[in-house]
Image (cartoon, one colour):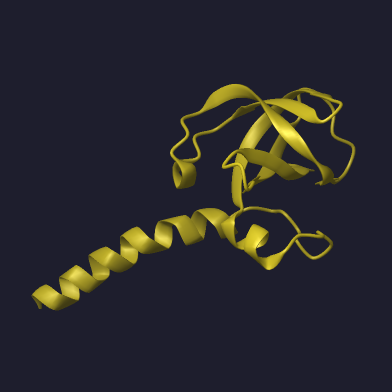
Length: 113
C-alpha cells in the first residue's frame, strides 16, 4: 500500500509540467523548430504590452516550469518567431518560450487567446 501511495504521489508531481505544457491552444504543426526546442518549450498566458523590432514587452502569469513568478518584462523575439493572428498591444496571448544555447529564454511563438 505504501508503494502505491508513493507511486501516485510521484505521478501527480511529475505530470504537472506535462499538463502545463499541453493545456494551451497553440497549434504547433506549422512551426519550424527542432524537436529539442519543442521538447524544452514552455507556454504562458500573458498580456502583450508592446512589440517592436526583435522584442516584446509582456506581463505574464507565473511560469512554474522555469521558476518565474508573474511579471512584466521585455523578452527577445526569435528572428523566425511565429506570430499568429492580428495581435495588438493590450491583447491576451499565449507565448511559447524556448531556451537558447546562452541559457536565456526567447519568444518563439505567440497566439491570441
